[in-house]
Image (cartoon, rainbow, N blue to C red; front, top):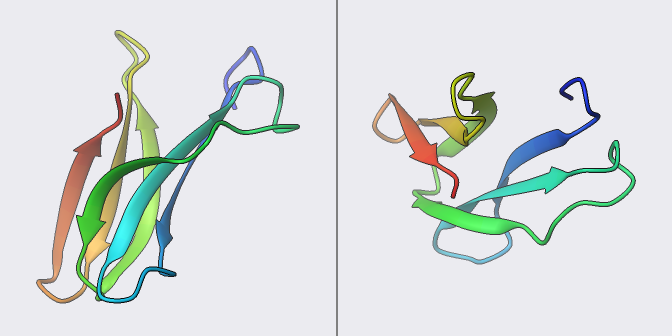
Length: 79
């Protein structure tokens, strides 16, 4: 959470079958409620782990995630 209590969370939605969807949500009330998750990407079934980073210059969030199938890290912007 930032100094105002704003929180960000990213996760892989594995409920859809063939692919995982990378999703992002935020809270502006200290985690009491969260926004409807935003679909920011599609990840192969081997995807795992997410980490949210906030750009210190403009406050825009982005997510780093690991694609196990290709053994690579990727970055996805949240807008």
